[in-house]
Image (cartoon, rainbow, N blue to C red; front, side, top):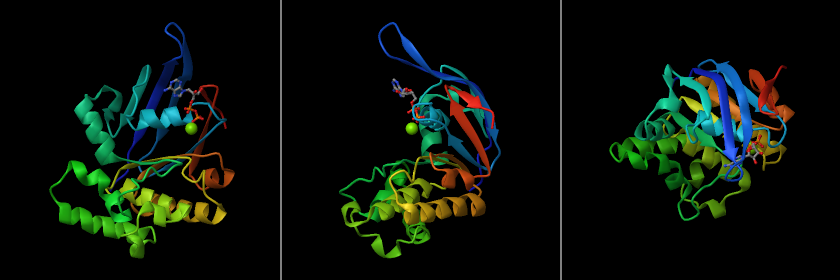
Length: 227
Ligand SMILES: Nc1ncnc2c1ncn2[C@@H]1O[C@H](COP(=O)(O)OP(=O)(O)O)[C@@H](O)[C@H]1O
Ligand SMILES: [Mg+2]
């Protein structure tokens, strides 16, 4: 795994609110993140943080601007290349874990590998390694309903890592966790950032989580606030 080098320039995004009106959410945002760096994204609720993460992960198209990741503008890839980018290069972690309730922890971790059926032995080995890394070696056969909130979120982290992504996008991943679980989740994300060199972009409301990142940007009213 090596990190994603990101150059965002003049990024804009609007959403239609009626047939004739739209709301400008991102109004020209520019910043860089070096490969292997960690960046906190803060700002008031509704300021466009999740929208920014969706653009970085090629889940949405911007209205204007560029997002160059490791030399390619991901806003200009075709649909197949975008899907491939999302699947192979990005690990998403959300506030809610979105685990499939009918699958065991191990099988949930394997979901991102479904697109590449070959090498299934390698993937199963990786899934066990990730389970161990998140401290859940013994819980691989449990269903999400048989795990605590903190454990479920750690399974979601393992799932985000199974494809060894260059970029980890985390949207308030500790938003529903208590202090102890927040600390262990943050330690885990930092370990992956430090030792596997994945670039980490973390949206957070928490000063504690933001302070653990190397750099911080803040979005206010659709623009970057100078910090
Ligand atoms: N798909 C959408 N359609 C219309 N408006 C949206 C959509 N997604 C987000 N918005 C609006 O964009 C603004 C920013 O949302 P969001 O990026 O989720 O903010 P944050 O994550 O900072 O709380 C909000 O006003 C929200 O209502
Ligand atoms: Mg949000």
